[in-house]
Length: 105
Image 1 (cartoon, rainbow, N blue to C red):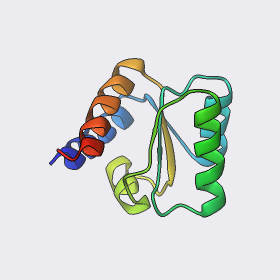
Image 2: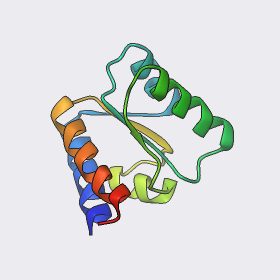
Image 3: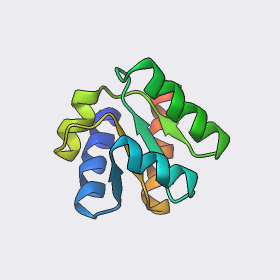
Image 4: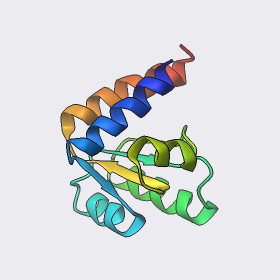
């Protein structure tokens, strides 16, 4: 239920134009600390996962790797394995919801 809510919210963020998609653009947003939250596909390549996880850790940007590439792509309407949320309000909501998933609710 919570996963479905997160994916719906991800679609809303896309329509609100507060989403950055694509590895190069997301990496740039992380480096410039514009990204507030990052989704990394659970089935992304090993090097991609490591690169984005390390960058998010270094720049203290929260990230989530619960969803598959297909789930993320379906939610935003584009085939992507990494997306960044640029709005702090949406990012806080994603942090709350992913915390609930990690706690097992």
